[in-house]
Image 1 (cartoon, rainbow, N blue to C red):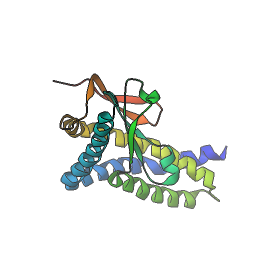
Image 2: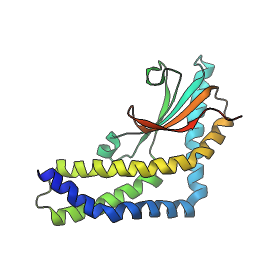
Image 3: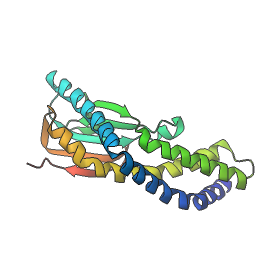
Image 4: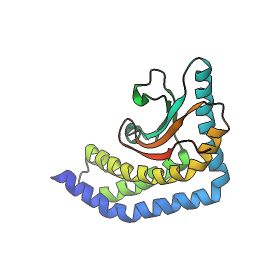
Amino acid sequence: MRIEEVLETAEEINKSQLESAYMLLQSHYDINSREIDGIVTAQFRQLFEIGAAAQQKGKGAINYLSISYLHSSVVTGSGEFHLALYDERLYFDDDPVYLYWSPSFLWAQYKKDMEKIEHALKDKIFRLKPYELAAVKSEYAGRYFEICHKMIADYMPIIIAELENSALVISPDFTVTYGGYRDTASVLFLGVES
Protein backbone atom coordinates (compact mmCIF):
# COMPACT_ATOMS: atom_id res chain seq x y z
CA MET A 1 0.00 0.00 0.00
CA ARG A 2 1.31 3.46 -0.91
CA ILE A 3 0.70 5.09 2.49
CA GLU A 4 3.12 2.58 4.03
CA GLU A 5 5.74 3.54 1.43
CA VAL A 6 5.22 7.22 2.23
CA LEU A 7 5.55 6.61 5.98
CA GLU A 8 8.69 4.48 5.48
CA THR A 9 10.25 7.20 3.33
CA ALA A 10 9.32 9.80 5.91
CA GLU A 11 10.88 7.60 8.60
CA GLU A 12 14.18 7.53 6.71
CA ILE A 13 14.13 11.31 6.36
CA ASN A 14 12.89 11.69 9.91
CA LYS A 15 15.61 9.73 11.78
CA SER A 16 18.12 12.53 11.92
CA GLN A 17 15.41 15.19 12.13
CA LEU A 18 14.03 13.96 15.45
CA GLU A 19 17.43 13.88 17.12
CA SER A 20 18.33 17.31 15.81
CA ALA A 21 14.92 18.69 16.85
CA TYR A 22 15.48 17.68 20.46
CA MET A 23 19.01 19.06 20.45
CA LEU A 24 17.78 22.31 18.89
CA LEU A 25 15.00 22.59 21.46
CA GLN A 26 17.47 21.93 24.27
CA SER A 27 19.96 24.50 22.98
CA HIS A 28 17.12 27.00 22.45
CA TYR A 29 16.07 26.38 26.05
CA ASP A 30 19.64 26.76 27.33
CA ILE A 31 19.97 30.10 25.56
CA ASN A 32 16.49 31.39 26.45
CA SER A 33 15.80 29.55 29.71
CA ARG A 34 14.86 32.60 31.73
CA GLU A 35 12.36 33.77 29.10
CA ILE A 36 10.89 30.29 28.61
CA ASP A 37 10.64 29.70 32.37
CA GLY A 38 8.70 32.98 32.54
CA ILE A 39 6.33 31.85 29.78
CA VAL A 40 5.67 28.51 31.50
CA THR A 41 5.26 30.14 34.92
CA ALA A 42 2.83 32.76 33.56
CA GLN A 43 0.70 30.16 31.80
CA PHE A 44 0.28 27.94 34.85
CA ARG A 45 -0.16 30.95 37.13
CA GLN A 46 -3.06 32.04 34.92
CA LEU A 47 -4.62 28.56 35.10
CA PHE A 48 -4.24 28.44 38.89
CA GLU A 49 -5.77 31.92 39.25
CA ILE A 50 -8.78 30.86 37.16
CA GLY A 51 -9.06 27.74 39.34
CA ALA A 52 -8.89 29.74 42.59
CA ALA A 53 -11.59 32.12 41.28
CA ALA A 54 -13.80 29.11 40.47
CA GLN A 55 -13.23 27.78 43.98
CA GLN A 56 -14.42 31.09 45.43
CA LYS A 57 -17.66 30.46 43.52
CA GLY A 58 -18.06 26.98 45.03
CA LYS A 59 -15.79 24.61 43.11
CA GLY A 60 -14.27 21.98 45.36
CA ALA A 61 -10.69 20.84 45.82
CA ILE A 62 -8.64 20.08 42.74
CA ASN A 63 -7.53 16.48 42.29
CA TYR A 64 -5.95 16.62 38.84
CA LEU A 65 -3.89 18.90 36.67
CA SER A 66 -4.09 17.47 33.17
CA ILE A 67 -1.60 18.64 30.55
CA SER A 68 -2.89 17.29 27.25
CA TYR A 69 -1.71 17.70 23.71
CA LEU A 70 -4.43 18.04 21.11
CA HIS A 71 -4.20 15.74 18.10
CA SER A 72 -6.33 18.27 16.23
CA SER A 73 -3.58 20.86 16.63
CA VAL A 74 -1.58 18.93 14.02
CA VAL A 75 -4.35 19.64 11.51
CA THR A 76 -4.84 23.26 12.57
CA GLY A 77 -1.10 23.89 12.91
CA SER A 78 -1.56 25.52 16.31
CA GLY A 79 0.38 23.08 18.50
CA GLU A 80 -2.09 23.59 21.33
CA PHE A 81 -2.16 21.96 24.72
CA HIS A 82 -5.26 21.71 26.89
CA LEU A 83 -4.39 22.57 30.49
CA ALA A 84 -7.15 21.59 32.88
CA LEU A 85 -7.92 21.36 36.59
CA TYR A 86 -10.40 18.64 37.56
CA ASP A 87 -12.05 17.40 40.73
CA GLU A 88 -12.10 13.72 41.74
CA ARG A 89 -14.34 12.84 38.77
CA LEU A 90 -11.60 13.82 36.28
CA TYR A 91 -13.20 14.10 32.82
CA PHE A 92 -16.69 13.89 34.34
CA ASP A 93 -16.11 17.05 36.38
CA ASP A 94 -19.21 19.23 35.91
CA ASP A 95 -17.20 22.45 36.17
CA PRO A 96 -13.68 21.91 34.80
CA VAL A 97 -11.26 24.81 34.73
CA TYR A 98 -9.17 24.89 31.60
CA LEU A 99 -7.35 26.96 29.05
CA TYR A 100 -5.52 26.35 25.81
CA TRP A 101 -1.83 26.99 25.48
CA SER A 102 0.22 27.07 22.32
CA PRO A 103 3.89 27.16 23.40
CA SER A 104 5.52 28.65 20.33
CA PHE A 105 8.99 27.81 21.65
CA LEU A 106 8.08 24.12 21.25
CA TRP A 107 5.88 24.19 18.15
CA ALA A 108 8.08 26.39 15.96
CA GLN A 109 10.65 23.59 15.67
CA TYR A 110 7.96 21.07 14.66
CA LYS A 111 6.86 23.38 11.85
CA LYS A 112 10.44 23.83 10.61
CA ASP A 113 11.02 20.07 10.67
CA MET A 114 7.77 19.38 8.81
CA GLU A 115 8.71 21.85 6.08
CA LYS A 116 12.02 20.01 5.56
CA ILE A 117 10.36 16.58 5.64
CA GLU A 118 7.57 17.67 3.27
CA HIS A 119 10.08 19.10 0.79
CA ALA A 120 12.20 15.93 0.92
CA LEU A 121 9.11 13.72 0.53
CA LYS A 122 7.94 15.65 -2.51
CA ASP A 123 11.35 15.01 -4.08
CA LYS A 124 11.10 11.26 -3.44
CA ILE A 125 7.38 10.47 -3.74
CA PHE A 126 5.59 11.14 -7.03
CA ARG A 127 2.35 13.10 -6.60
CA LEU A 128 2.29 13.13 -2.82
CA LYS A 129 -1.36 13.26 -1.78
CA PRO A 130 -2.68 15.57 0.99
CA TYR A 131 -3.91 12.61 3.07
CA GLU A 132 -0.45 11.01 2.82
CA LEU A 133 1.19 14.18 4.04
CA ALA A 134 -1.40 14.39 6.85
CA ALA A 135 -0.44 10.85 7.92
CA VAL A 136 3.24 11.83 8.01
CA LYS A 137 2.45 14.96 10.04
CA SER A 138 0.41 12.90 12.50
CA GLU A 139 3.16 10.28 12.85
CA TYR A 140 5.84 12.92 13.39
CA ALA A 141 3.64 14.87 15.80
CA GLY A 142 3.32 11.78 17.99
CA ARG A 143 7.08 11.65 18.34
CA TYR A 144 7.25 15.36 18.82
CA PHE A 145 4.72 15.17 21.66
CA GLU A 146 7.08 12.64 23.27
CA ILE A 147 9.81 15.31 23.21
CA CYS A 148 7.32 17.75 24.73
CA HIS A 149 6.60 15.15 27.43
CA LYS A 150 10.26 15.16 28.44
CA MET A 151 10.38 18.94 28.47
CA ILE A 152 7.14 19.29 30.47
CA ALA A 153 8.50 16.75 32.97
CA ASP A 154 11.57 18.98 33.34
CA TYR A 155 9.24 21.90 34.13
CA MET A 156 7.45 20.08 36.96
CA PRO A 157 9.45 21.79 39.76
CA ILE A 158 8.50 25.20 38.30
CA ILE A 159 4.85 24.18 37.89
CA ILE A 160 4.62 22.72 41.41
CA ALA A 161 6.31 25.82 42.90
CA GLU A 162 3.76 28.01 41.14
CA LEU A 163 0.95 25.76 42.43
CA GLU A 164 2.25 26.01 45.99
CA ASN A 165 2.33 29.81 45.70
CA SER A 166 -1.24 29.99 44.42
CA ALA A 167 -4.50 30.25 46.34
CA LEU A 168 -5.73 27.02 44.77
CA VAL A 169 -7.07 24.36 47.16
CA ILE A 170 -5.90 20.90 46.13
CA SER A 171 -6.62 17.44 47.46
CA PRO A 172 -3.95 15.41 49.30
CA ASP A 173 -3.78 12.97 46.36
CA PHE A 174 -3.31 15.73 43.77
CA THR A 175 -1.98 14.27 40.50
CA VAL A 176 -0.42 15.82 37.40
CA THR A 177 -0.77 13.92 34.13
CA TYR A 178 0.55 14.37 30.60
CA GLY A 179 -0.87 12.74 27.48
CA GLY A 180 -3.32 13.01 24.66
CA TYR A 181 -6.55 14.90 25.29
CA ARG A 182 -8.94 12.44 26.95
CA ASP A 183 -6.61 9.67 25.92
CA THR A 184 -3.89 7.74 27.70
CA ALA A 185 -1.67 9.75 30.01
CA SER A 186 1.33 9.27 32.23
CA VAL A 187 1.67 10.56 35.78
CA LEU A 188 4.25 13.32 36.21
CA PHE A 189 3.50 14.10 39.85
CA LEU A 190 1.54 12.20 42.50
CA GLY A 191 0.53 13.62 45.87
CA VAL A 192 1.45 16.84 47.55
CA GLU A 193 4.81 16.77 49.27
CA SER A 194 4.83 18.55 52.62
